[in-house]
Length: 252
Image 1 (cartoon, rainbow, N blue to C red):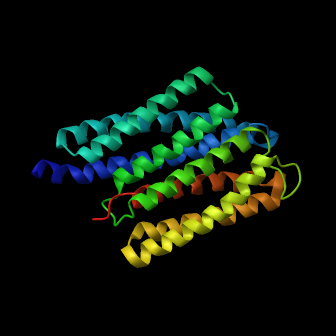
Image 2 (image 1 turned 90 degrees about the vertical axis):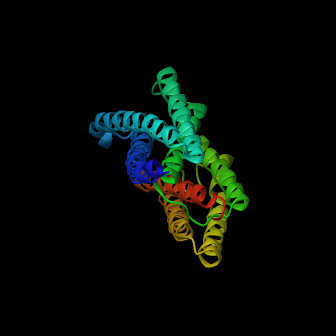
Image 3 (image 1 turned 45 degrees about the vertical axis):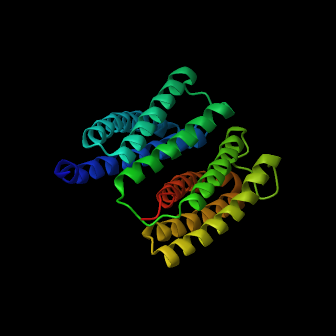
């Protein structure tokens, strides 16, 4: 038991470092997708690729270390989360080798959702227990993942920069409409978590969901000029999923 208590701070620091690295992966990956065809950003693409590869490698190494530490400490929940982190990381590595720089819809969707899930797992391992909402939060996680999947598919179809009502496919319109409803619902869920559970994750979720709503509306309004906001939107989506992951824990 003492060994578990002594190792907990190190596990959390390592998981926090992995979470920061995953933010780099998410940002770099989104940048490579959204800026690949922008001539003004051509000089930054090699740096983005290098940052993506380095950060992804660090996360995978960290995931194996987290799994070894959790296994030695006999912490079942951490073993499960670390094993999931390793599994998703290896799966994305295989996809990366097999698909290369492909921007096919399926490849983009798998990479984006996988990155979001890995970030959520890292945050869950880094943050001590919070008062969760259990099944309600799990249901919200599922809805968020479906929403993110439609966003990835719309992005991969080449309609990510369409305006509010021009040049958008039905999938892009659906993503925007359901996104507004989901963001408002998540803000309500966050308020409940904060007031009823006194959960810090509720406050974080409220901030992330509100930012996600504003960024989504901003990207829709700016159309082709919204690449920077689209990148921010992706990061906020990943952080929103991470907060939901925290709230999906069983209430202590």
